[in-house]
Amino acid sequence: MARKCREYLSDLNDFLDGELSEELCKEIENHVGQCENCRIMIDTLKKTVSLCREGNSEKLPNSIENKLTDLLSKRWQEKFGK
Ligand SMILES: [Zn+2]
Image (tube, rainbow, N blue to C red; front, side):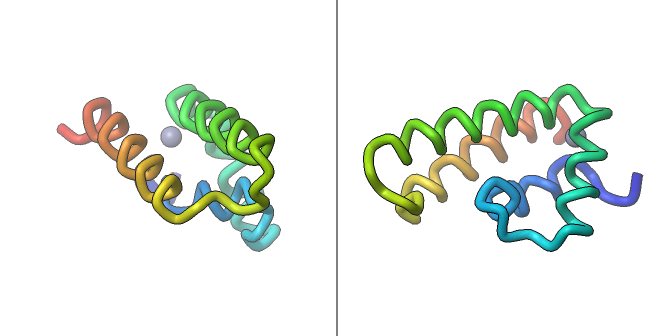
């Protein structure tokens, strides 16, 4: 695997927004298919994003996006950061 889990994290928001290139999307989908932790992360992120979107806003406010990324980074580090 060319990239580490944490390197995918920075692309996840764009991935969920459908803003990544097809190639990158496939790479992430491939990785997520093989990596349970990333699958959980994406699930969590998707749920949060859809909750936010139900509250009317098309895009996540930057502050929420940053918080999420922070939170996910920390969780990820706890698991993989040693
Ligand atoms: Zn992973």
